[in-house]
Image 1 (cartoon, rainbow, N blue to C red):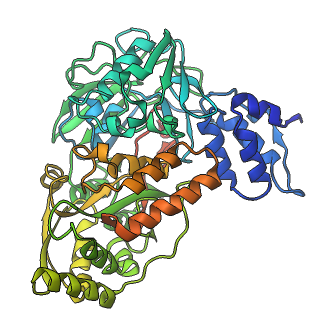
Image 2 (image 1 turned 180 degrees about the vertical axis):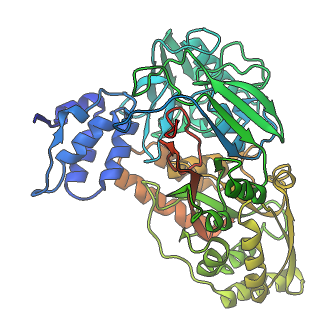
Image 3 (image 1 turned 90 degrees about the horizontal axis):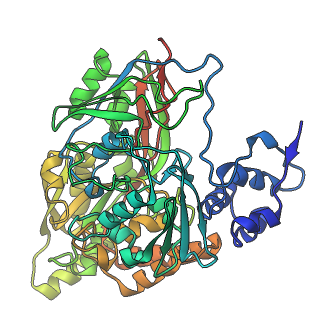
Amino acid sequence: MNFRRITKKQMEQVHPAIPGAYDQLAAGRISRREFMRFATLLGMSAGMASIAAACAAPTGTDVSTPAATSAAVGETAPTTAPAAGPRRGGRITKAMKLQLLDHPARLAWLEGANVVRQFGEYLTETGSDNITRPYLLERWEASEDVKTWDLYLKQGVTFNNGDALTADDVMFTFGEWLNPDVGSSMLSLMSYLGGLQNVEKVDDHHIRLHLDAGNIGVPENLFHYPAIILHRSFGGDIVREPLGTGAFLLQEYAEGERAVLRRRPDYWRMGADGLSLPYLDEIVYVSLEKDASVAAMQSGQVDSMYDPRPSDWQALKDVAGLATRSVSTAQSLILRMRVDVDPWNDNRVRSALRMAQDREQILQLSYFGEGELSIDAHVAPIHPEFCEMPIPAYDPDGALALMEEYAAEKGLELPVKVVLSTKNDQNEPEIAQALKELALPAGFDIELDITDPDGYWSRWTEVPLGITAWTHRPLGTMTLSLAYVESAIGEWNETRWVDEEFETVLREAEATLDVEARRALMCTLQDIMQKRGPIGNSYWKNVWNITHERFEGIMAHPTAYDFFYEIYDNTL
């Protein structure tokens, strides 16, 4: 058998910073996963990075990797079908709320993204392994200072109207993201671009980004769920103009009712059987609330449901014929405080409420212990740059002392009355009720304002105190840029919190290639958030994918994304 090694010279040809990370891996200073993420972000294929990681294994371990597993730089990871081969045809039916859908760049909820991603696609893709790979891109290249990024499009990709994907479509899409009138969260996420003038069309399949400030997260940001690549003629309503490069065609979208997508016969990617993907003929989404979704799963009316709650998992995990898959994530239900209104504009009050969290109890009561305890910073252990810190203890006495000081200064009586707003479709009500009871001895009288999802999402950035569901993102710096910087006020900075030191360190972290150095900066960022930030967070969620066992190729994704191109019904 032939085996292959990757030399440092080959690594350097991809990016000069990769050999240094290889040395850190060989010395045991970073993990294999951290090396893989670092190398792939800088343009090395996942296959090539895997071989390099194996070569850096400690002495005495098997460092050989078959050459057949290697892949060219920028190559999308191949898929392998079971020996029997995939079956074609059939339908999958999934229960999932269907809300207003118009401009993909404005997407602010994952359910809509799950529909659009079946007929529209992204330049990159972050898989269930939290590694980002090229998708509509053939490859990318980053300059040594990560301020210049060259994006090379795959050739032969077509939209479902027959038009070839070119740099003009990508330029148009960037224009939509960076247009303040569109209202896309991509504008703040990619604030390092500085404007459309820094996006250059080199030729029909080559785009160059000239960043105002270096940022290692560009490939990850290109898979942010509003980052669907649009046709250059797009007019603003994706339901009326469902043009995309994806494997399905949108046949019907009725808000609050159902969505139907059917197989596109001329999709550009091939399956394991040598024929055009997808394997399924049809996807049907049925708009159901969670309780109704569980009942439909139990009765066999639907094959899967979106983002099961812990109570749903308990009800379905032992049902015959259903397969349950779980994955650790950076998904969370963030206790967030608007720092521009009383009493949350006083850090003593914010600190007191954070201290009123009994994290272990909240995790057990609201999520059956199926998660990982958190500090009060929006960075999770799954993130490569996470800085490990002690989990804060429940401290009602310390919290009460802060509240007594605050109340005496303001001439108030304790407990201070506050309203906690949230929605009811996940496990927010259980968290809210637990916090209400835990915070009473800390000097808070919490009134609960719990509505259906539409009732909360219509005002989520406006309520003074809320619990907001935030999805997984593969880099710790991503959510910080989306939600805790000045440029995100009016978009996703729901707390209005701005901290000059925090933003300065964050921008430095975004431009820092060395994983260890970036982790040191993250220690500072996490410390700032814990001492004077605008949020509390008791735990990070495990999430489940629960789907009928007859479907092969299903994966649990940390962002609860639906990847349906390569699944098939093994009973056909």
